[in-house]
Length: 404
Image (tube, rainbow, N blue to C red; front, side, top):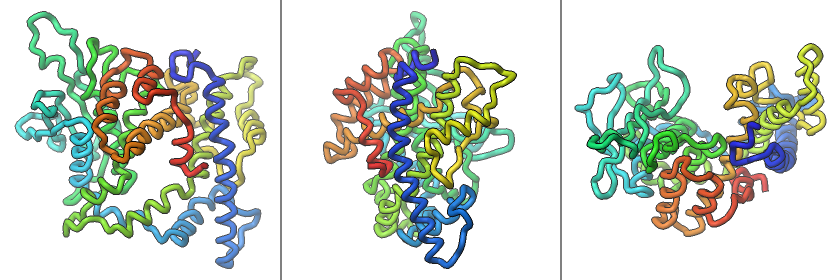
């Protein structure tokens, strides 16, 4: 029943996707483990029984530095919060014609929060955007997008149209300092949340109940994960990744090393996630369930053996603390949605790559119309077909992960 009201429709469709990725990731992860063990042997160290789960990340970092000579922390001075914010506003403008007008005169709920008017190319007010970037006492952890008012056209007669303009907030938890420098993952998070933000700001629906991010669970991450792609593009980084003190652009050599290393350890990362998504689906398909006799640890062990869990990797979330299993009904049998959305976002970004222009105006207009503006007014699989002209193709995601 959980899958019926999602793009997947059936558990079988979810399992087919997960097992397809699982088999390719297993081959990649086993090759990665062999590389780690070769490094250990060459360095003169000894590990009884080979690489174990507590060894993997330590030696993976050693191998990454030896193989690619890339230290991601060297990017940090070029990724100030100011620079990354400028970058995402630039991408927003190039794709959708949005302009962000800082309004320091607007009172916000905290002094750290910046308020912007968001206007389109014709200077029409599209949204009010609040950027709440810094950690503080009593603020929730993590990163998220929220709305204080959703877009709507369903207004009482005589109402001011501004009452249908969305008020969208992006929330992060960066450490506040004189110069707030972000890791590359933090920069991706900022772009990710702006993807959700665009889903709210560009919404063009009659009813707020169908507007913005009120879409199916396995579609809602498409707009956010898609936005991350532009943060990874050299065209954006060369322009906006500038040293916070000297304003010098990021060295091309550093970008080339990052690009060379970007698919490193993807087998491990994919296995770690996919096994949790598989166990989530398998547990929710147990029909003959006796709470007095069912042993979840035994079930987990049997399934990991059946699937051939690679040595040296463990589940990212063991069942006892796997909140997606039991937190709410909306999360149940739903951990797969991130991978499902990754198939969609890789395919969607390929539409730009195929034109040779990551800001192609024709593709961007279709993206805005069918992905960011339509909310839940049409079935998401239909919206994707209208954007791409066909059903999603898994090959783009596999290529992005380096699994093919």
